[in-house]
Length: 427
Image: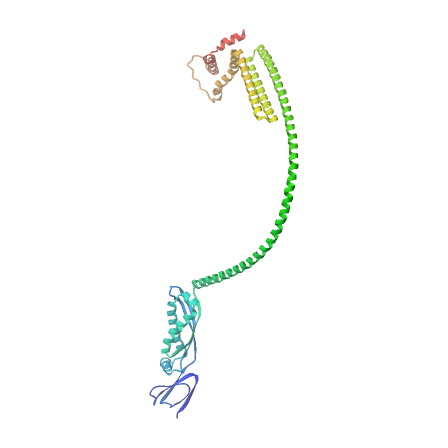
């Protein structure tokens, strides 16, 4: 007994068997099927959504990126030829198997398109990429009876930051354009403000110029009056200062003359004192030459220093540096000349006696220097041949022997016989 079979618009029935030269395709509707001698099969015409992942694919320039695409595909039921091809490929298979075949086909074409384009082309022109994948994939899937309803590029990403760098460059460009636009707007506003400010300042400067002219005339007249007053005042002050300076100069000259006279009298007194001291020294016996020499040197040095200090003080007080320095040099030269003259006279009168006195005064020091090495010796070893003195007497005798040779040395160096000079001094 035959049976009628029906199906909805989202599937197709395929009847094969006896009395049919080729399978009967019925996309939606009804069909009469003889049991046993004929067989009926169904194939889904529903739209299938495929998520196409293509990770780590190298593009035309060798940059690795990952792309995710979304495709809507279905078995075409309106075209008998495509439906027949789909039946040949997928009849009897589950929807998951059909989806897997379509997904692998689309994924392969997606990778191929990625390899033929640069990252910039895929990133900037997604429509071009989608159309390229759609066209290439549709050609292959049509042969399987599958129609690509739509294909959309969902996501582009990379692990190296290449896409981020592209976005940063674009962002920087947009920000630059925004800053340029803002700067141009500020510039236009500034220009208008400057023009308004210029007009305001022109009016202000015009008023200021008039005020400055009036003030200038006032200042010029006032300056003329002040000049006359200051001139008279300066002349008066200068005359007073000049007269005061002349008076001070005369007073300083008088003071200088007084000091010169005082110094002359002091020098005379010093000369008399030198004569008195020389006579007094003649009456002495012990160290006459040394005492006179020491006294004359110290007195002459004191007088020289006093005269130098007075000359320098006088030069500073009268503010006449040139004359004061000349006076000081002259006074210093006179003092030194007087000192040298007194020394020469003293040495001339007491030459032998002074030398003898100095030699006698120095003999103890010479003896101490001769005996100094012996005082520092820790141990003395003496060898005697049995003749002469030994012990401390021998050491003392050696020192005295050296001391007895000093008059001969002094006579050889100075020509003065110490023994004769001593005998004359004792008489």
